[in-house]
Image (cartoon, rainbow, N blue to C red; front, side, top):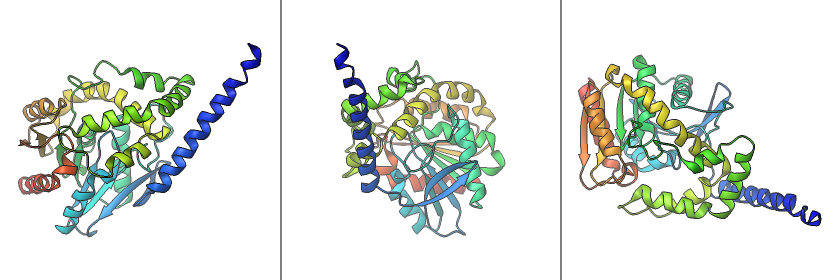
Length: 313
């Protein structure tokens, strides 16, 4: 029995080496494509296109990948003369997470606000997709004078109906002190691809997954740092939304809410509820769209931005 104990450290070493090799390969295949800005000791990665003198529009992705979710939208925004930026949220893509143990949507709003100030950007239009619906609302509540307007795409804004409303076993396990890291490494090395494929399919359904998206997600989302950031965000959403939703009626920033008629998540209910709660909101339902609006309906995203600016002037 005791002779077999050496297998435990050997197994752990093998898992660690396997994970390191996979991370190295992922970052070699899909390197950062943008610029970096450091605020409060945290380095954030972002993409920027368009003219610096144009109206700034800042795009914030949901819970799966990174700023590149807005590639097609950024191209259209730049062509229309906007200064378009898309951030990797803290812990995603090539942005650092920060040293705080639990990062909330409010913490992320602070970092994004500081980054925009460092870049000399004032009163941007904020475009938040999915999880970032709550993030941009939090930003507008915290920094009303620095927010030019909101566009929310298939957003999650309330605790009720959120997939992890009552918790999430996987997220709870991998965020445990000490043991969580071991659980995460074992999970990613064994069933990580199965889990990721399921997430990808459900996120896009019933629309198709774009060519290349699955490969990029399997590479980058399964890195321990990004997987942990995502799991922490899953757990942080419900309590933050419960606390923040009582303040929505106090947000005076104009907003355009865009939701897909075929979105399989609760975001349609969330959008109609927010339309009632938010004083200066308009709602657009795309009957043929599902959840991943930035990928499949980039034109509709820019139409929402321009609709917002027309009512803000």
